[in-house]
Image 1: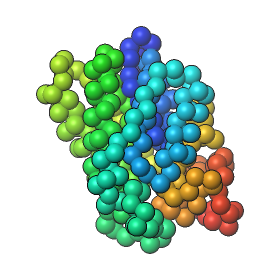
Image 2: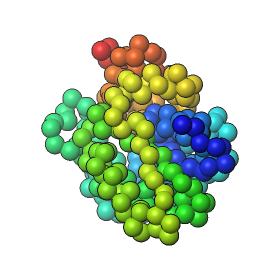
Image 3: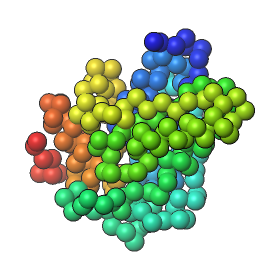
Length: 232
């Protein structure tokens, strides 16, 4: 059921495909404030550009951009440690890949909950996805169920709720939904390693390319070479 537009919600907007669709869904029913967290990741400048452009396209005026220094300092991920190479998708096995940033989403959600309290927002939207998440443990439904219990216990009113509208969808389903909603995929960025053109070979790029191919749609962002676009 649609909520009155004066009901506030925060959307965590990385600038990627999933968070963009999530932002469109949130903006449809709520007065949205967008949160972007930079954490020293390889593509932070490009992701920030996407965040700002998506907010402009969706007419989201209320924005908060913060920097988390802890995740870069902690390291342990190919996204934040230059000494760890970003693997190509085909080389990733069954274990959690080195592109996982340790407990990252908890850092993001903590900022979002604090801001939600300050703004009197009732919902926090995040574009977490379980089926095509590279096996990241902080993309599971149980994670968000547990976090909602933390919010209930640790906030003044205990009424803020994390919403994960995409969590059970495959990437192709997210592409189809985004196209139906008019999501600005042309402004999004998913690549783990490059900021000029998407590499086309990291796990995030391959999952994205596979999704657009399965949805029989054209991915509008630039890739390094057309040879790297795999048909599925």
